[in-house]
Image (cartoon, rainbow, N blue to C red; front, side, top):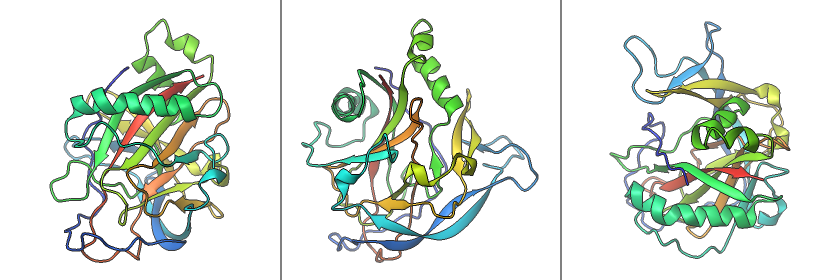
Amino acid sequence: MTTTTTSTQTQTQPKFAVTTPDPPIPRGPTRATLTFYSPPPDGSAPYNYVELPPPNHPQRNYAESPHAVTISDIRGREADFSTDTNGFAVLQNLPPSAEREFTDDDRIKETYYPEVQKLLLENMPGNADRVVIFDHTIRRSHPGAKRAPVTRAHIDQTTRSAEARVHQHMSAAEAPELLKGRVRLVNVWRPLNGPVVSSPLAFADSRSVPDSEIVGVEHRYPDRTGETAGVKYAEGAEWYYWSGIGNGERILLQCYDSALGARTPHTAFVDPRTGEGWRGRESIEARALVFG
């Protein structure tokens, strides 16, 4: 399977000093401010540099638009959601991973990637028959972490970047044929220090966010340019989170589906119920191409 570790990004989430090791788990709906996309003030095409930008260039040229939204808790409703319909799904009661530390990229690829591959083959709706995991990101909230939870509503892929991923990670002979069939890009998200009590992940029902509110943003790496999607504030969008998600649970965030189109805007958020000194969230998201 293809394995490419993502580059370092600017941290956007505050760090946490743990003084309360076993805090209570906030449950039920909450009201919080999410950060949405706003176009560049000068009307130029939006971009974001993954690493340090060139001299005299900003890290990103687009603006942000904060809005308070109601975020519903799916705890107890787990079976109500599907990647085909809502763009996300959740899994429970999974056995412990063979990978325990999640500190060594090579070991993660060797031990955790096969688990994710098996999980997707067994749980994705439709006729998925091949899974290729192409990278992963670990996010930690403690001081010194390379990547922190990102508090901007976004989707990891667009149609253009999804098709480019197929060409990038599959052979030149295979890619055109694979693109004739169903292609999905799915993030498998889990905490590393669950249950999550701070920086939870919010995700929107795909059907409630129209395509008109999703904007392609150039994602500029040192060696190539990809594309992610910024998400504008949409009146009536339905946002969810999963309270107290534990290490034996997974969120499947579908970022692209060539057949049905369901895709999931998502973002970390600051829950106003989080207490001072509660432990910061640590998590890993593995990104996969799902064929069939």
